[in-house]
Image (cartoon, rainbow, N blue to C red; front, side, top):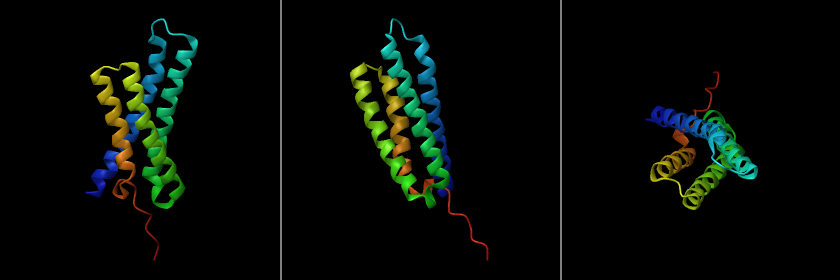
Length: 125
């Protein structure tokens, strides 16, 4: 079962990276957006990419890096709360809201499961 959690965590991490990348690319399609709004939109996408990367790093090295675990978990919770608030304020469609909040909260939940991280390397006899 550990392997399933580990694989699912990797999928969630890459999904958050992909969502952030898509968010940055979508900036070019914003109708009548001010330069400042475009800058914040790109910045939000960049934040998603970085949090997704933190999840991938924790997945691989979290067993031996307690500081990484703490930072990753805090970033996940912050990004999920930000997604909830931003979705409400911006008037995101129900589909957009569900996808974004589901992805960010899945990564957040999985970041707290030790079974989702790689096992520590085996010691030589």
